[in-house]
Amino acid sequence: MGTEYILTEDDKPAPDASVLEDLIELQLLTAGEPLGPVDFAHTQEHHKL
Image (tube, rainbow, N blue to C red; front, side, top):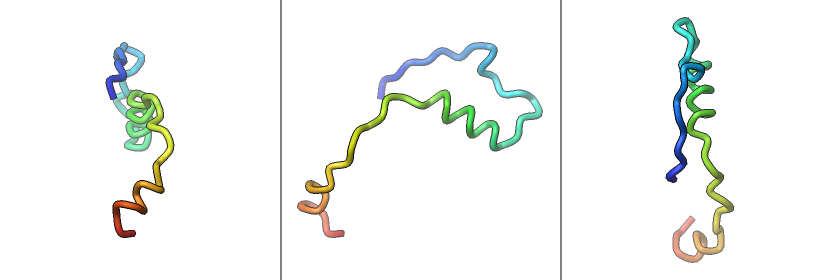
C-alpha cells in the first residue's frame, strides 16, 4: 500500500464542508489500487466459518 499522492490547494475541504463531504474527500484521496479478489478456498480450509 505504497500509493503516493500529493495534496494541493484544491484538495483542502471547504471551511463549511459537511462531515459527509469530508468523508468523500478522504475516500477519493486515499483510493489506491484495488486489493484483488478474496481467496475463499484458503479461508474455508484454514478457518472455521
